[in-house]
Length: 259
Image 1 (cartoon, rainbow, N blue to C red):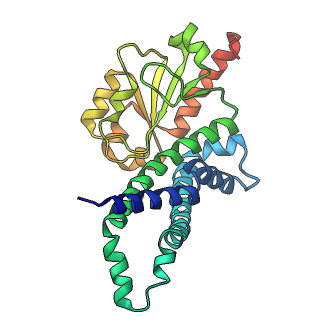
Image 2: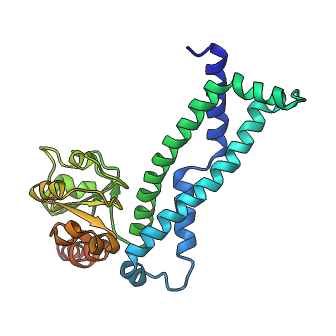
Image 3: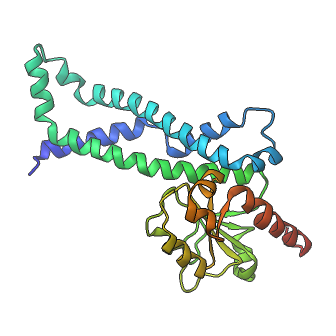
């Protein structure tokens, strides 16, 4: 069992690190801005190259996080162990310092691994939101409706008055069985769109999604290179989502006076 001192050290490591590491939202936003510095980054260009942008920005955000993580860890170690480390005059004493705090360090590094996964998912959601803003699509983020989706387009207010004409859009970097969360018995909508970069959704799950009128929205590379993705009618690319689903819905919303 860990001692009170070991628990205290672990909590101190987490506290200091949290204050040093940028948020997933800040890192993702920086990655999006960096990718869109080119003069070509207008709305038409973005929609045409959305798949590549999603993949490149996701990787860039992850690399930015790793750099920030190392810097934050260096400052955290100095703050928590600096006073003790200064008293170590031999390699053996340094080893004793690490050994005496093994529990705290072990649990702390495990928490870093989990944090990377959480921030990667956050980055994916943030970059989709940034693109919706750039492309001037109306949406309500994190609406409190059945299924807890990430976005309702054009708005949650319209969902409450005419749910069958809205688009429900959820972002999950990886799925496993979590796709079932977005459709509940009370959920309604023109269609459910689940954006992901997960290459491991099974053909069985895709068929189950189709019965629930869920479209999987993926980068063009996944749609092309994964055989059962290519064959599934409810797996569409980001580019196809804009062209065949969201943009036509925008026209209907405008014609009906919603926008």
